[in-house]
Length: 196
Ligand SMILES: Nc1nc2c(ncn2[C@@H]2O[C@H](COP(=O)(O)OP(=O)(O)O)[C@@H](O)[C@H]2O)c(=O)[nH]1
Ligand SMILES: [Mg+2]
Image (cartoon, rainbow, N blue to C red):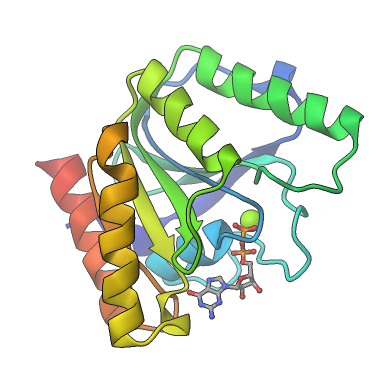
């Protein structure tokens, strides 16, 4: 089992030319602003202040690297789909993403976080096509499931199964920061995938 508690903040980049090739195995977290990326990283690592959680969306505009157990690095990508972002910011976001995916690196797995209550957006589908085009395995992580009751959750899981079916998704994982069992399930899934 990977010991995610050992994760430490490594570095943060806001500009494309700061990115360097890396041979560490990376698990990359992406999703719309506010989907719950930083909260999820904090939860699975059992640390409150590792990644910054914000109540106003669009705050994380840097790529953040966290050095985890063994040879694993967790990568918190800047959120997308933030409508109020200016043209210039959007350009910086795009060049940062292109530089990240374009440098020589070892991306093992992407987790695309989506709010469990809503269907994927156009931006999510763009991100999914991107993963498929680059041959990066991805899981759909459905966040904030504490906002749903049991019946609603099972309906949303069925809906996502169907929506993801044509898009080569390797797994659909419900998640909430409000339930330790949910976090332990994701830690175990990641350990099985990365150590198997
Ligand atoms: N109820 C609930 N709120 C969550 C959960 N995960 C994140 N949030 C809240 O959603 C907001 C955005 O979270 P954040 O982690 O900053 O999202 P990011 O922009 O994707 O990094 C914050 O107000 C979090 O407290 C969850 O599992 N349940
Ligand atoms: Mg964040």
